[in-house]
Image (cartoon, rainbow, N blue to C red; front, side, top):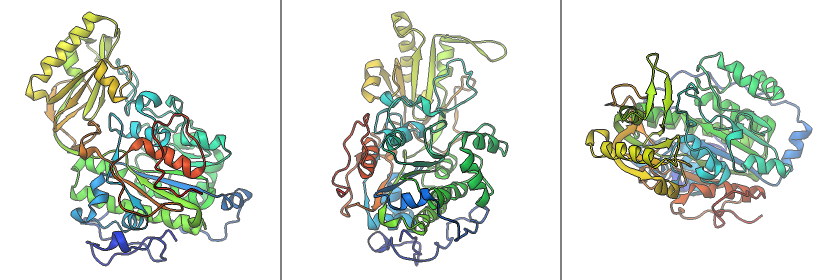
Length: 485
């Protein structure tokens, strides 16, 4: 069975090799280093729910994949859990039973929406089109909207390929899935991060999913809630909908690392709570009778670095006269604009063919880079940006030094203490940006850790398990990881 185990102490030295993934036991005890915040208890699940024709059909399917993403799960949390004294029996169990990589190298920039789209397409940002968390908005008219809509994805996704092959899909809060052709979808989108957002989410979900979910669970997995509610949604999909591919996204670790820093007591406690939610996912797979056919992948989108200082690149451009703001604070005209992505930022020109404008922006960036207070490690020109396969169409990009992070907005001060203690978005070659990769269950060959692998290999590997082909994938599947069925 996919079931959690209860360790006897916080330092579980033998867990990676000895923790049984298929052992029946009780959920792990709550021994996080700090008391968890109050959450609603998991609902009682009725055991006499009638099986549907759809359920029976899926029981006979030959392959079932559950892809779990834990936002901000640094590679070293998985490869060196004892260094952090982590009580994560479910992650340790998967690692011991399956296979881990020493790291997962993400896209440029290493931010959530860009990486999660690479995870389901196997394509780089310049191919799949999700270049950052937010679209380029030089006049700041989009009210801080994100790349929420699946129609922005230009590459074939796993859910597209599955549908074409007659397979079904489900998703819990996966980024860039509003309007996606996912059979059972709890999309990620928010407006005010209050209960009123539930109406928005219900409008974006299928009516049958709304009605079925409400019978067992009181709260939707909205942005202002926790990973406990996302665990509820995952449990429901795995128990009731039994899709061939289920995507599950946990967000709370990223928020804790931004607020308190990577490796902080608060971040580690949050990861331990997420591990308990992962245990619910594994138990739901087992309770549905799907363990023999299920392959579980646990991944993350990026790592984290500590930061102390925030810099506003747009303020640098404004000071150089590259866009205008009226007395009401509205941008009235622009010649250059910025997309901020944590440790990186892209600069787009209104007329990229204008050599005079290009020279003006180049001079402004060079001057800022020469001043240590701005914390600019490197200025990329258009040719260098193109080589990264990120920030498609940008004329320049800038990279922050360690301890610095780029912030949105053009107001004063240009440089200030960062409100966040942790950040990401830096180039993927930086070791601290490496994400986690674990595979376990049906068809996974046990063995020594894989080397650091590209994130682009995840989607084609999942496609191989499901018998699919992704036409836009840029990397080969991990053929040594998965047994041929």
